[in-house]
Length: 193
Image (cartoon, rainbow, N blue to C red; front, side, top):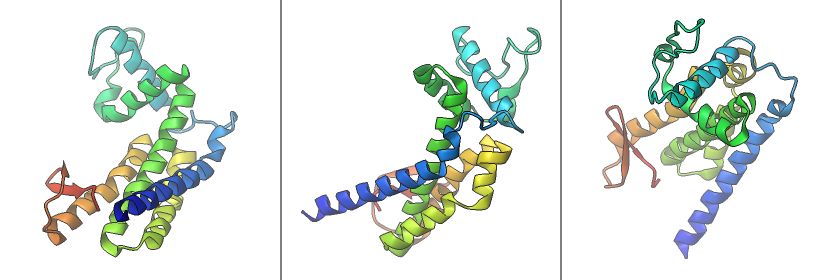
């Protein structure tokens, strides 16, 4: 019975973080929001080129051959493939790269909040403090500036992994229980906390 109540509390936390993420992401619904500004155009073009490379049976395209008048361009050497692959998958569902980009950054917002919640909860064992910390993390000005002004997708995706690294370090030094762990670098992350 206690496990069922704890799982319901975890579900409530996830719902709260999704609602906060959706509230923060309301401006993304505006069709006049310029996602091409600053780095946005290159991330959308990189996802488009990655999809074209997939159609040419190139699974990990470092050089997108259709760019630069057929000479190719190496955008995927400068950025990790995770963001481009995620945008491509979402664009296959919604048939629009701009919508896919907006959905991806919204998912990044929610995931960064959730992992911050897991990190703070493992330290404090207090759900209210953990929810507050994750909401503050999601609404930090730099986080929002990367989302709405700079379109710095690499930095934005990194906001997901920052709490995971600290959670892994915390578990590495302060827990001795045997759990299922996800290894990130030299750290282990406990998802059962």
